Length: 433
Image 1 (cartoon, helix red, strand yellow):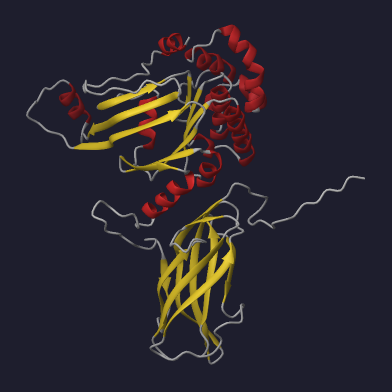
Image 2 (image 1 turned 90 degrees about the vertical axis):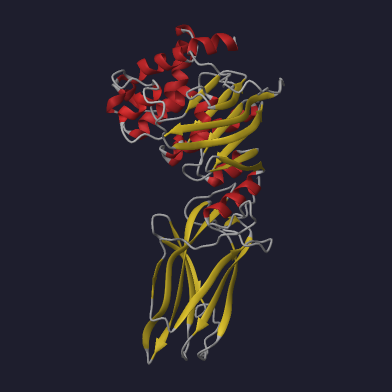
């Protein structure tokens, strides 16, 4: 049955390369196996260069290369949910396209056992001139289903997509949200053994995303395999059994979601140790900084509940914001503050030493000090930006000595998000009468 589906899709799921020395481990429990995969692209300045290179019209002419993937290997067992994370340009989408047969590796092999349903690019495989229903039949046929099988699944697909009468309109009239709802509804309702998703859920609204993740949970209970790329680290932490971290084509590691998310955040803030053991550090390059500079912050870091410098904080855990500051001139009563904003720029919460009734006395020039704010993380899972303020009053006038806006990105990882910006940590008691 699997071979028949592959043939009808016209995709060779076992992609060979010129490297004849590669062999794959046979195991009935392995759903996806990637072995020593390298993908190299030639970079062309003009379209004619591609033609010249393809037909070797100028064999002496060399073109620069981009190594999108470098000897990457991993397996995904049947029934596992595995996430792939990494910065833009790390090779995430490339490896998914190789696994699904859209791309051929330069070296190495990718082998898949089972019927794949892949949602790689919004609208891939859809005909813009066809109606939604017509595209359901088109995609179902491409995935190896008969018309009778699609007939049976059509009500479930349309119910899941929930786009109303638009299913009878050409998809070129759809919004991006409607497009992804229909595409995802088709992908998960054709009874795949393996589901592969590349960031498609970021287009749908929060209610549709919740519906999709409930489907993920159903798939997991049914023993199906899910491989997906996402920048939503809370979803990665909640749904994945294992995570693979890619960076600039290299596989930096694989392991538990927490381990790989911690490592990923080190990469994001430039604190990942390279092969020489050197640690490169730095704040957000887009930080807005201003003030009189009579005093200033010299450093700031986030310390997790394990006492480690870590920008990834688990919701519900204790953490510290640690600020180092220097005072250059005598100050009457400096105020040290922090604020969390969401990525849309809305201030969510914050406090300062005046509100907390701490360090209200004057400080002499030349003083160096460290200020620690310790609190529990009750923000919902997501991305936040930390801003710092060092202010005070001089002869009754409010004065800004140093401000750093959006200096540190903080990721909150959660497996339970309530409504709104923060969690009230409610305790529930139910009494039956």
